[in-house]
Length: 150
Image 1 (tube, rainbow, N blue to C red):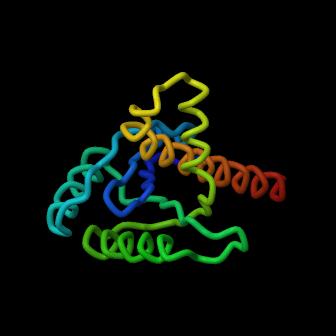
Image 2 (cartoon, rainbow, N blue to C red):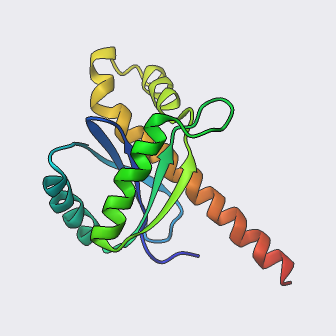
Image 3 (tube, rainbow, N blue to C red):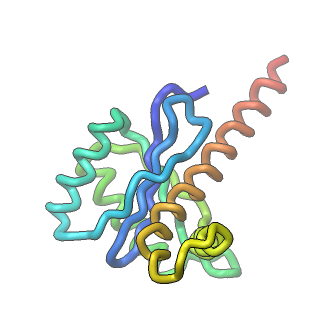
């Protein structure tokens, strides 16, 4: 099992939802939503975040279309993540997140969070959902690997 945290990003044009795993890589917790600034501002901010959680690993959600193809936003996400990867020496993983924002909105509606408050939480919750899917994928791969060696 993992022994290093992973940070997940839900990258939008103005905001980035951020989630972080527990040290064992079992659960994803929402961290915060960051309002993008200049590339240098973003670099300073994310340098601090990755240092705070002592990790060099992140996962980002790629919004694909219904055919599974990369969208314009997915290409922007890859571009942004590659910038962070190069400048902060990170390992980056991508995961299909076609419906994470809609799932996050549904969770907020079911939790009786008022519509005007959704924007405060939706990006962070989307990042948390992206990270939880990724953690479960890793856990299942490790489980299969262990079973094939028994």
